[in-house]
Image 1 (cartoon, rainbow, N blue to C red):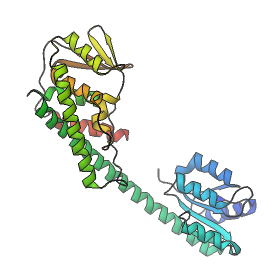
Image 2: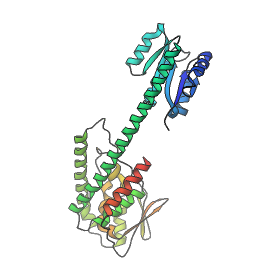
Image 3: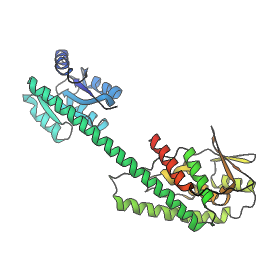
Image 4: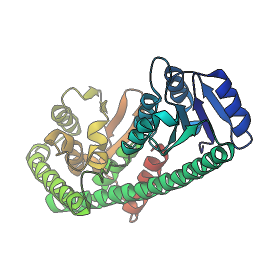
Length: 324
């Protein structure tokens, strides 16, 4: 929903009525009599508000305080200050500190006030369009990173494990999808593309090293029962063994390799589930339950279809995007 309302905060009831009568033909107007009331409106209906305009001199707290609050909690909201000529120094300070878009002097020039409100609403619309484009761009970049990680895991699995890695990785991706795998975060404020690629390369190397460490553990297991016990031992406190099944109650080892931040190094436990599947994923069968992901081992190993990776990337990316 695109914000379309104007919130005006002033301790003078007549000023609120006058403003609403003047501006409501242009946009819906909300009003508040104090900074605290204004904060309450922002908390309850901040997503609906395109423009916040506040008087400066009010009992209890100054308008600047409300504008700072809006800047911190609703940074895309257009913020304005209305003040008397004698208080222009405070308005200039508010502009210089990034708290407001502009100020409107009292007493109002009615045509200038209408023009200012129109400009503020247009700016809000422009910011919404910009934010939507940025969100779409970020979602695409995060989808691309998720797909890249799946491809990297395939290379890691093929390089460190036996040749029949595809079915195990397919089961890993199915488990990640069922467990609510998210799009990995990318903080472009603290890194550029080259740094992201460096983190991702370091991450893949660390995953490969951990996989190689688990190889000697899981390759030595000979029976399905022993294999489930080995998985429980690798994930202490996160796996419950019941009969011929194992229930993984913690989501993290099921999705971390795909949706964690790039700079977070993997621990061996976070790689254990994928490593275990390299030996036992061919016969693994998954079932979701309220307690977690239930894993059973069948008698007949099954092969992954030819297009398994493309299908998995599409399904996981779509589910993660819809949940974002």
